[in-house]
Length: 80
Image 1 (spheres, one colour):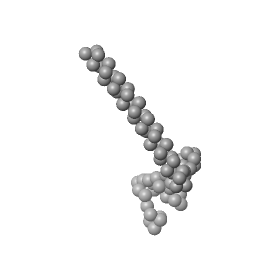
Image 2 (cartoon, rainbow, N blue to C red):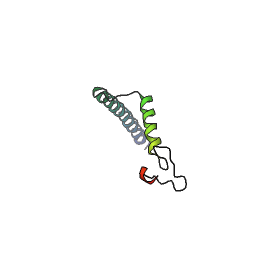
Image 3 (cartoon, helix red, strand yellow):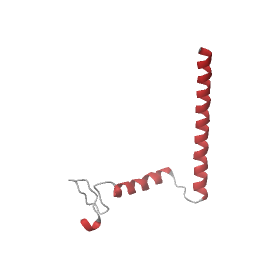
Image 4 (cartoon, rainbow, N blue to C red):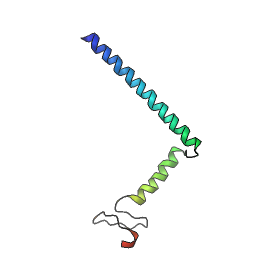
C-alpha cells in the first residue's frame, strides 16, 4: 500500500511540474505574440489604463463624476 501511495505522490509531483512548465510556455508565447503585434505594454501601464477604465465603468459612477448613491444604478448621460 505504501509503495502504491509513493507512486501516486511521484505521479502528482510530475504532473504538477508539467503543468508549471506548460503555464510558463503559454505565458512566454502570449508575450511574444503581443510583442510581435505591437500590443505589448509594461505591466504598470496596463494596470494604470485598466484602472482608468474601471473607474469610469464601475456601478454608481459616471464618466462626468455623477454618482447615483441611493440606488447604485448606472444612468446614461441623458438621465442625468
